[in-house]
Length: 129
Image (cartoon, helix red, strand yellow):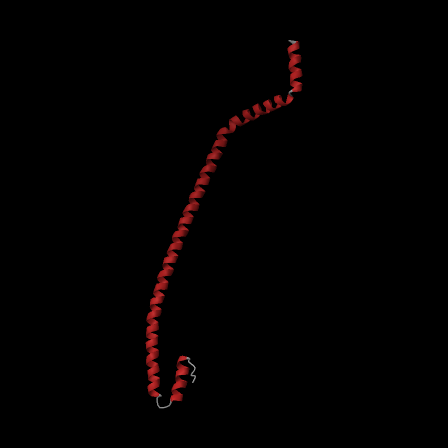
């Protein structure tokens, strides 16, 4: 018996690292065994929070895309409306300008210099010969 204890003591002194690592592993296993449920719960909560965050980001992205598409649609409609109004206004303006131009020519046909000056003032043209 004493011989066995002596042999075990010599082996333990020589291989103390194995004993220390084994004792540490046993200690960690015993301590963490109680907390596994808590760690699992924390992990599950983290995964749930991650999924919720991804869902919020996707919803936000989809909402932004819808708003962007709506803004583009409104912009296109506004541009089309403005182009139609401009074309109508341009036609009426050119018709009004044409009528005014003819009126000035008729009233000032006797004096071409006065007609040129009136046209320059009315329409912003410069008369060049």
